[in-house]
Figure 1 (tube, rainbow, N blue to C red):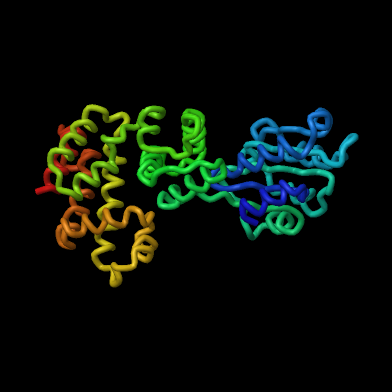
Figure 2: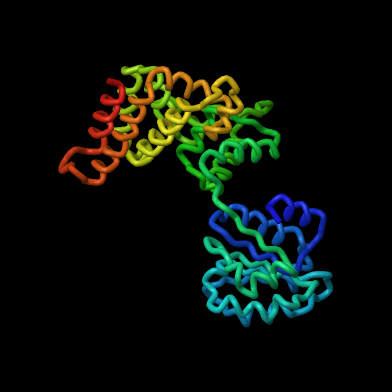
Length: 334
């Protein structure tokens, strides 16, 4: 079952005896756990029927014994095991998973790992409970997730603002959700749309000096603007790391190269789907392709690899990352 199906069932009070929540993305695991923690039992029922265990401080037999208890003056008991990836011999849970109590909701948080599908434990949980693998979103999927997150809160965000958040926070959904919640709180009464101005004022990310604006300056071959941005980056390297700039430039020009060889450039939705970008940004790649022919685009991608190595000390003894970036941008523009 996917996240939405599990969440929908929980809201409708359709419960399973075991929830084994695993995977690389902790955000969805924490969200499901919090909902179960907050909503399955009433406050009065929690005193006797809700237990939270931690993998570092518990053993598997303690988990099993806790799950085998019957609820007191309630229909269910909830056992939540956090940091379960630290429990030794997790496979011994098979002794409970083959015949779990229907009155127990055993929630296993198995972050950053997954169960071996070949094992008996996986098959037993799959038969009697819920197996959920929380996967990291790809960077190109994050803007869509941001839109969906805000839609649930009756809010919207400008595409450029969503890209800005994605660029600086990556695909860490917990951080992004936290910042979005802050932005929602700071929106003036009657406003429902988040812009780059809101982000700059409340999060501290510059709307004028960022990698997204650098891409636009390079696309327009606006030498003055590009130099202003790289100078700003050089003076604020902590908030604008060289590796992030190189990475975003590499992804940008890789998509420009892909655009060059598309057969059908007239269908914007098809172009957006192929490039894995919001249709709103297709125009940026069209403009960049006009400025940089396929040969020059390949040269730029090669340069980016070269300067990535230089930043790590290869064929470079003393040039700072700030100076390397200035040199790189000069070569791209000229």
